Image (tube, rainbow, N blue to C red; front, side):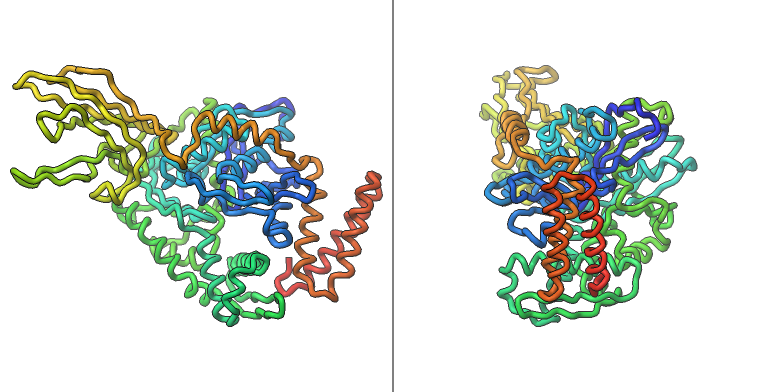
Amino acid sequence: MSDSSFVPAVVGIDLGTTNSLVACWQDGRPRLIPNALGQTLTPSVVSVDDDGSYLIGAAAKDRLQSHPEQTVASFKRGMGTATMFRLGQRSFRAEELSALVLKSLRADVRAAFGQDVNRAVITVPAYFSDAQRTATRNAGLIAGFTEVSLLNEPTAAALAYGLNEHDDSQFLVFDFGGGTFDVSILELFAGVMEVRATAGDNQLGGDDVDACLERWVMESARLPESLRRDERFLTKLSARCESAKRALSAGGTTTIAFQHDGHTVDLSLSVDQLERIIQPVLERLRHPVETAIRDARIGVKDLSAVVLAGGSSRLMPVRQLVTRLFGQFPSASLNPDEVVALGAAVQAGLKVNAVELSERVMTDVCPYTLGIATSQQLSADRMSHGFMAAILPRNTVIPASRVQSFAPVRPDQTRIDVRVYQGEARMVRDNIALGSFHVDLPRGRADEAPHVNVRFTYDVDGLLEVEATPMLGQDAAGKPQRLVIQNSEERLSPEQVRERLQALAALKMHPRERMEVRALLARAERLFTQLSLDERDRLGHAITRFELELESQDQTRIDAAAEQLRRVIRDCEADSPLGA
């Protein structure tokens, strides 16, 4: 960092399914902040070490293969649910594991600037539900941030891309990450960045590509179904498929080859084969694109650029699909792995009124339709219930506040139940329930029927407030009732968040200054599990020597043993059919 006295007031964080990054606005531009290993990408993986301490990042990722029962990854898909993830002897919710990742990133910020930063902009998939957004915000609070605001990932990517754009334009952000997919269409005019439409699938990502590849390997190598219950085999298979997928990002052909308990896998894989294998994923990518274009009311030819975000967008079949869909090559000006974090840093700069961003304005939209359950009079003697009445249609520019009036079904009714939903289906049974409350109706004159005004207020952080006011004519006739969504077992209450914060503070975290040592050992242990028995001796000896020198606490001897271990690792990886 160029200014040793500089400390950012707000940081931007890309909390990803596969990797997470932290950045800040400094010296007139967004800057990525490296972790303890000097890298900007921190794998979103958590592992419990043999001494009971918790590892986050590269060291934890390597332990996925050597210690799968003590390691967890891809937990972002569990955000907003009551799903528990087993880690050693303890179980965690997704927001608690995410909080551990965020706490690690917060430590990286402290190491870079000498003190804590307590405000954060955390990105979320545009199509994250209310429960998932609440869980993400809670993860930030559990990690120790005192103020957390949310930013849609494709909007963040657009901010980073639009930073150096000065001409009026319309462009599309194609954000295909490890666990989610979003597409947003934005318009830049006179310094104003406006989201026109957004769509997506929060259960579609690179993990689904891996799943397709894993099924193909099982079938092509004619492996027994019993291996699907072998956790060590599955982690080994997953790692090989991920390596093959990355190798094919530049095209050509690669190999998936390994052995496990007498079973041999040795398969050749080309880009054309990969495209056929992941065809179900490619087909699912089309629908959100079509929805966003239709909602934005523009033609494909009106797009000046297509911006890729998310590591999974590097896949050659995905880039080819994008080129076919839009009739143009996607923009390659920004690293898809980094663009969301850089955009979060731009938003952090906007929050502190950075002078360089004084002429920039950002607007966003509500990703889902929000409304309440209503009834419809089908005939004089027949009433049908459970219809969705939209109050805030999807892609409404936010912040927004809308009100609608609703009458009781029967003239003698004394209260109205307000049931709030999100989704696009006609019937509420097919949408997601957010919460409910009731409003008592006032007694009116015979010629003055009571009704209820229901107001939805939605802010830029994705927070929804529902207010219902009983009315007689044009006048309020009772106390407004407000919706506070805390009645779901899948959500943490403020008290539970405080409890989780205290529990996390009590966990033994692996010291940041020793992360490089632990990462080197984890890398060596992961490689050791991949080698055949006759190849393990040299690496095992180097690991043992390194561990012995660590106990000596003599830094010169430790450095020498570490360098020797790195040489042995490089030699072993060079001999591997997949390389590093």
